[in-house]
Length: 410
Image (cartoon, rainbow, N blue to C red; front, side, top):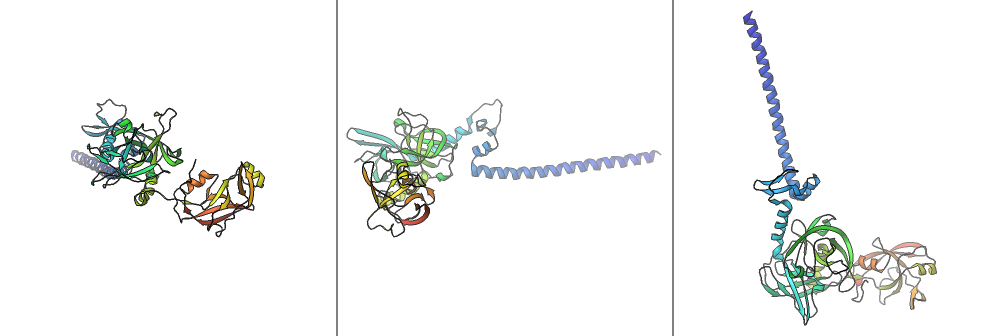
């Protein structure tokens, strides 16, 4: 009897042991699978951080970047914990951006008799090409360039452009440290940015902010208007014009150009020329010192309420084609000029011709719309005009001429 009991106990213990071993094996297998999943997750996370940057990934995860710090143990993430804060991730990014960009930003002075102007500039290639604002440079002067290492150089003005308020300079020498020009089409409102400029002559001052708006138009200090600007709240003052607007990779996304203020002092509204605008004109500045743009070879007057009623039109916005220039090909391409002469606002004008309502399928309400839509065109480019004639719309293709120098937007 005792032998049978011992036998059964042995069997029970063996079963229990086997069950324990099975449970341990299952747990161990699941742990291995978890470890594999964690490794895959870490690899995916590292790839995501490399592509989008740590702050972007953390914000998507609803983790406050102010709660991430560089410590003696490395980066640590924590929320609502007391900790001896050493350097925040934002501070670390700021330092890295400054160290990357500081050698590429220069101080510029321009003097003509009793007149003195100062500003900033950005080195864009190793051979000494420098971007700045046209309004920084006084006429009939050679600007002085002050480099990060204390050297002073006299620059040659390669070219300038009123429409963008951009000037391109060059200094002698080589192996300068340029900034990388980032694609400004990828920027968005709310994105963090930094500026590196020389406000009031305080060289290479770093400021941070965000992108507050895009595609802003402003009046130029020289003439006309500058279009499609970046609006930001980084600090700017006299001397900041021509300085660098940077993303969190330390790459150039714009050139600081002006502030919006009733007092002339900083009020949190700063504008910058986007890099894509700069990239589109620099080759022309190097080649010929100015930018040529396309234009139409006919004159026009804006359609207003008075003209609409007089002509009994069904539309109230557009440009009436008044006269077509001599030797123009536009009439051959299907454009009908005006033939009715009237006295309008003290001037003799011609009405009754085609009315431009769109350019390349984008609505044209007035002269400024046409001006902006043709800003990025070149002579001999072909565009499509949508015209209104006899209560019908029609598309006509025309070839552009070179825009005359006296055409400007008010």
